[in-house]
Structures are given as structure tokens and as C-alpha cells.
Length: 288
Image (tube, rainbow, N blue to C red):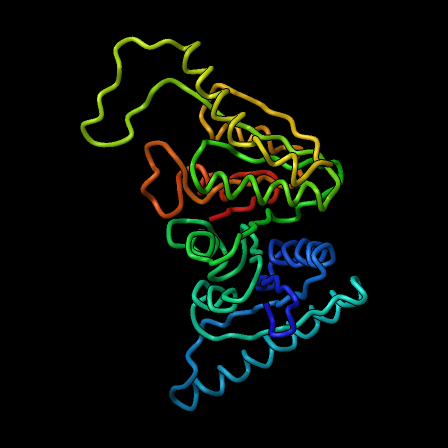
């Protein structure tokens, strides 16, 4: 937050369709939160060097500043009264966004961009920011539109980050005056590490009941804080990636923890959250 206490939403912007959509999404969210938008454009060029390089850098800087100023002006025209600042940074996109996000309540990036923003491979900007940002990160698909989308979906698995994701999802559902669907995907036992032995015989009914208990206990108690939020519980047999992508097809927002239980729980960004950032058809919030 700023010294005045105004919440800040950071947006990664590079002129791509995905970052344009991210900026629009962030502006609407800022309106709900009475927050300001910090639009961050990063140039991956050296700050100093030979005269030829410096002149080229200055030309790029001026062009980037014009693009940033024009975009901020356009956003202010679309969202009167919203405080929007443009920040031009030099260096790597992910480190720059993480630096700008140190005092933010939310960071928003597009899932596909230009240059360093262009993909979501291992080590890419979106994945890196979602892994290391000190605040929740929302990843927006290119040209996503809210028309026809309805409700918030949250993935549940009983892990600590899942609990944080549930809190975030409840707050979003209340702010948007919409429903919340809590989804837990369950499946046959799988190995969670080297030397882990699977049972030769297991009771599917017992596994399903255990999953149902985890789901119910995970969302219990929050109705006192969010009495107006209508909550639906969905217990689905299948892999979490597939289940959540399918459930999120008509959602306004899909919320997950940055890592959870299962075979990939030791990763900084879990396999499910990474997969959703890649392929989800709606905005995805990754909560630590």
C-alpha cells in the first residue's frame, strides 16, 4: 500500500492483447477495492553502454514512455476517478514486477505477451511472478471477456495454501455479489514421493467419503464472515487440472493455492496451479 493507505494493484503491461486485457481487468478490480493501478512496462535493455547503444536505448525508452502514457490516459478515460500511474522499468520483466509488487495487494499479468512476457514455459514471467510475488497473482487469458461468465470457483485440497485461496475466493464472491463453487478433485491413490508404496486394495467409497470430509471442513466457518455468499460444493473424481479447467469454463475467476498436496507438493509452484496458469479459460488467481 501507499503511505496514504490506498491499496495498489500492479499490472504487467507490454502492449500485447493479453496485457491490455489484464489492464482492463485490474481497473475494474481496483474500482471494487477503491485501489490505485500501477501499470508497469519493462524494457529489457541496458541502462548504460556505448554511445550507439545509449542512443538506441533512449529511443526505445521514449517510445515505451509514449505507449505507457497513452495507455494510462485511455484507462483513465474508461474509468473516471480511478487513480492510475505508469512506471517504466529497465531490466528483467519478472524481477521488475516483483519489485513493484512489494507494496501491492494484487499483481495482474497476461498469460501471453510480447518479448519476455510471451509464454509460460518454466522460468517465464507469469510463472515466476506467481511463484514469488508477496501478494496474490491473477493471470488473464488473451482477449478474455466477462460476458456470460458467472461465479467464482476455488480449488480445495486441504492444504494451507488452499485455505488461503478459499479466503480470497470468499472475499471475491462477496465483492462481486456472486456464487462460490468449492471444488475438490479426488482420485485413486498415487505415489507422493520416492519409496512411497501404494495399497494393493483400497476402498473407493472410503476415499470419496474422506474427500467429502476434507471439502466440508475446508469451507466450514466462513459463512459467519460471509453470510451473503451462496456456496456450492462439488466433489469430482478426476485429476485436479482437468476438473478445475472444466469447472472454470463459465467462471468469472478460478482461485487456487500456489502449491498443495500430492506428488508435486514440494514445488514452489505446484503442478496444478502451473497447469491452470497455462490452460485455464478464465482468469486464474494464484494465492500463497
